[in-house]
Length: 562
Ligand SMILES: Nc1ncnc2c1ncn2[C@@H]1O[C@H](COP(=O)(O)OP(=O)(O)OP(=O)(O)O)[C@@H](O)[C@H]1O
Image 1 (cartoon, rainbow, N blue to C red):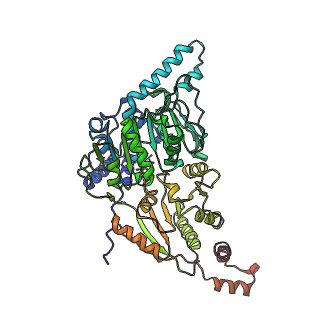
Image 2 (image 1 turned 45 degrees about the horizontal axis):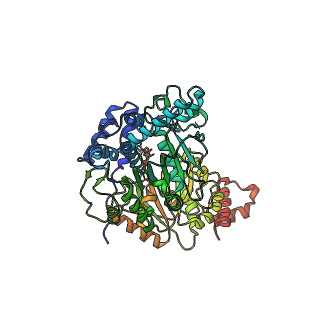
């Protein structure tokens, strides 16, 4: 059997994050070294150093670098997007304004490389004229009809962007817009409701909104409303009052005025059958992760839509099967990767991208130890070695996730704060996501399906408890080691022999080696300690720590062994 390939180089995501940190902290000598390292690894990659490059409308070019995000280790917010990633650079330096503005762009890059922002930049550039015209007309008609009576706060609410969603209540409700119907100009199709909400918040901020939240704890506490914050609405020059809607099946009807619709394939199908007129003015369509959203019926519906409204189509994917996509998309196509932009059709069916910079491990569970016990022991060992461990554990489906959650929560009490993302049965999936995102929890249990495309800061470890498809492995592994994270990511598969064979198979296709790690034991001589405790009596026992370990061992056996 072929020996495993050498370990991947330091991840591009990590290098770019370190470069942005060096620039922010004005450490220019490190910045120069990092820039040279990136250049030597990707000599032919097109580079654009700022968002102020020609294809972006000026309001968007100034908005993007002004947005800020929370970093738990710092007192004040830091820029979310100080400069383009290599992928965004590649898109910005491509002839997208000339070739692809009225056609399609496929953006294909590894997880965590900044595809989402790239897609929104592209779609908002395509919509620039129509959005400004629509929003400008709405404001004009409001001020004309009621300028004398309109209050400053009403005007402000009207000219701020808004999100309508049945599952997101953190933002103020949109003010009513009098007058005729204005159906969506853009349709975003994403795999899950959670991802739709996550993306709508990005779009909301790009379009002049600010997601207000008290962040941080103790000495790091601050309110995101910072006086003079460059991302506040006063400095925003783009279209005002854009209406975003996240729509899901069984939601109330879509608001009459919706400029941008973000939905799942199920939401799209349900709208298409109940009110097809909603799609009559669509100028731009974004398909996120085509491999997971394009069923035959969705493809047929989209083909019909493309033939009627001739939209520009933007596709983003970490894994992309090209033949079905190419037969669906309007021509000509532009293919953008981190290192190239080309109109040449990719020669392979699936463009395989390296999963750089991640460590991949396999822990084989013996038949004597239940997998959940091994999982718990692994997580404990990770936390003991590095208290900043933040982990995501993937289960094959919701029943397996639901069965494991209470056991893992009890067993790891005191080690981890746990959230579980149960898409269909959970009480509040968004609450779980928010807890993990804002670092109120440091362990998230979920399924590959519900975790598609979700972005969390600082995830050091991903644990996989089953044999995913090769594509799913790429997606779940890609939840750690993302842009914005300097710590390396580690993916550990836990299970029987078949799980090991599967992950090693993925490694052969994607070019990474898999390290075998031993199953963690109880960490003590249980029988020896029990014997001594029996001899000495519990009250006279002096090896206190060992006794605690024995107690924990017995608790684990009770809770985790079925
Ligand atoms: N220019 C930038 N500078 C700094 N951080 C960025 C930049 N662009 C994106 N990011 C951050 O990088 C992280 C990953 O981005 P994003 O979620 O777009 O990745 P992706 O390629 O869509 O991943 P996936 O395939 O998992 O969906 C996010 O936290 C995002 O905010």
